[in-house]
Image (cartoon, rainbow, N blue to C red):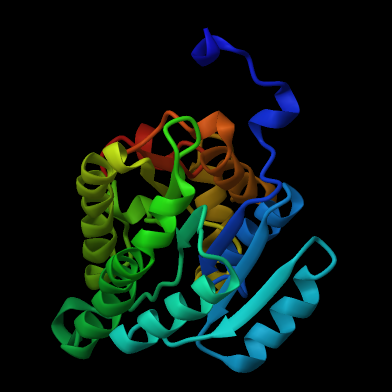
Length: 267
């Protein structure tokens, strides 16, 4: 039976001919994922709010494959629609959408400001929803029963366990994104689109640089695998979810944190 044919090992992770968008793909986790998709053969568009960051990322990633960088402020609905239009101009099909752009705000409870909710929720939760809305026709055109289109949302282990940092709006937005992932997985599965989320632990990035500098060794020591995340750890799980190997997964939240959130005893 055709459904029981075995895919070769290389074919399980081959993204040749695929077209992908990675938001926030000019640094940190987004760039790790973009590089992994490029190395697996995909044609990739990355976005960032800053034009200079886009130009630098395009230069850095050009050695790995076909890359294009588009500046866009994804905290705004009109900018999400503009980015979607530009992505679709490159192809009527979109095989992989990675919603990675995000913001964090740390401040004590007593002084946590109202704008810390709007800024974080707009980018971490509303933006992925707006982009999925805008790009759903292109995702539907790409997906088939055997090879669905993929949506990969970047959540956080802060939405699985309670972190020590006072990141109220960040943790709440990521928990909401995890649930949105499940809701959309149920709705879009019959339309040949899978929806999964990656929940990263601590990886080297601009967002986490101060934390790593201050307590990186302590965090690593408390992790079952006794280290922080590396570039290949993030690239690998993204390629898995985007490729044939991950085609029967949907509605999953994958913690990539060395076991921290899933083995923690208390908070």
